[in-house]
Image (cartoon, rainbow, N blue to C red; front, side, top):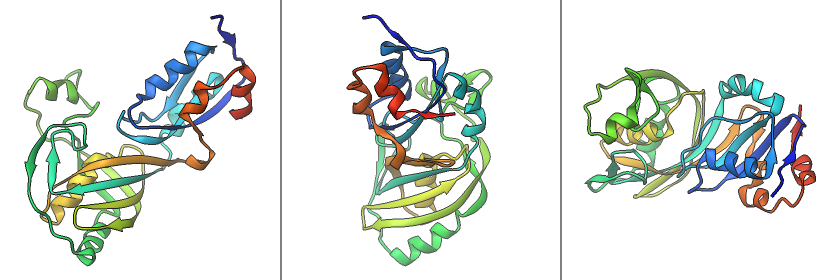
Length: 232
C-alpha cells in the first residue's frame, strides 16, 4: 500500500480505548500516512482510556508546552485490594475488607486539594541512575522511596459505595493518578488500587472533541484525516 503524504499542521484528538498503547495509535496513523513529524502530549497507559492529543507536523513543536497544561481525569478507586502496579494490570498481593462512610471519604478527599509530596510509583518511567523505575521493579530490585511535588486543583465524587468510588480530578502535569488511589485509601485506613483511569481534558482540549479510536481505522482517504484535524 502506498502511503499518502500529509502536509497539514494541527491536532488530532483521539478517544483511546483500554488495551491500546499510546504508541500503538501513532503506529496506526504512520502505517497509512507519511508525516514530517508526529507525536503525542502525555502518555496514556494501555489500561487507561480517554483523550490522547496527537500533534502532527509543526504542532509537535508545541507538545512540550501542551504537556505542562492542567489535566482532568476520572478514576475509579477499588477498595479492599492492592496491587504492585497500583492498577488492575498488576499482581494482587493484599486483600481485606473496607468500610464505607461517605462523610469520612469526603472529609479525607478535601485534604488532597492543593500541593503535596506524592510518592513516585515503582512501576513508572521515573529514572534512577539511568534506569526506569519499572525496569528495576520488574527485576525485583529495591527502590528507595522518592517523592515529587504535585498539585491538585479540585476533586469531585461522582459515585461511591462500599467497594468502589469514582472521582473526577483536576491536576497539574506530573500527577500520578494511580498513586492517588492508593494514597487516598491509606488515609482512610483502607487499601485500594485504580481499577479505571480516563483522561477527560488537557488544557483547553476536551474529550468531547475527540474521535473514537475505531474511526481512524476506518479512514478511507487523506480527506478523512483533514476533516478531523484541528489546524494551527
